Length: 88
Image 1 (spheres, rainbow, N blue to C red):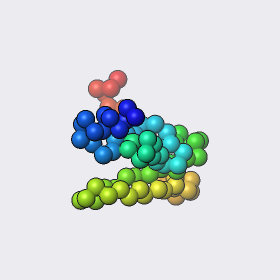
Image 2 (cartoon, rainbow, N blue to C red):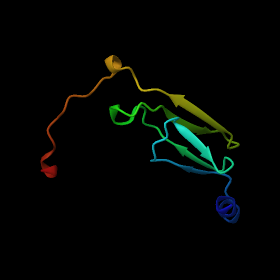
Image 3 (cartoon, rainbow, N blue to C red):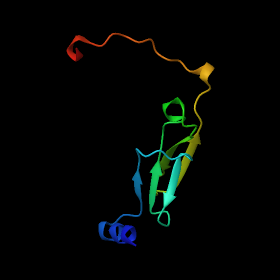
């Protein structure tokens, strides 16, 4: 496949990417040579997705930590402050 060829030419084993919503928190593709990791649980307070963090050890073994959003009553939302003048 194109992904395997790209990884071989560039000496890569894994392409790790983000910034695309994945309902399961992470998704392995192309024979586990590409992974998408999404780290925002319940994105925009309406998607109902879980989130994940990819941890690599010193031998590049992969470990995914999957987590849910904090319950609504446990969230500590900071008070809104006015925008600094340099943004006005």
